[in-house]
Image 1: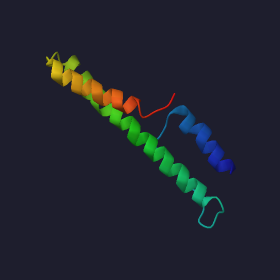
Image 2: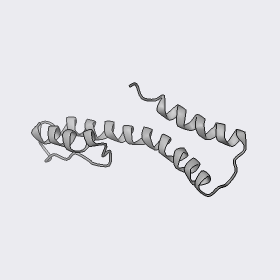
Image 3: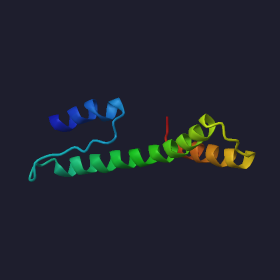
Image 4: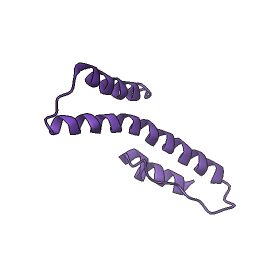
Amino acid sequence: LFRIEMDLKTYVAMGDLTFRSGLRKGDELVKLSETLNETVGELRNKLLRIKDPLEELEAIVSQGNKLDQKEIEQLVKKIRDGVHEFKV
């Protein structure tokens, strides 16, 4: 339990969603660790659905490329939809 608690404080609380919690096979808390890994993986996927269109928009803007209104609206919608997956 201490290991899982430290992983949560060290990684997840600091925004690192790339980590995987690992326990020795046979440990009573292996299922909890697996569930934690799945949950963090889902959070990572949700954030990628925001990050990818945001980076696309940033790249276009930084290169000085022009976007038509429809393209801007599509990228903003992807970002907004991703943000709305979270309750804050």
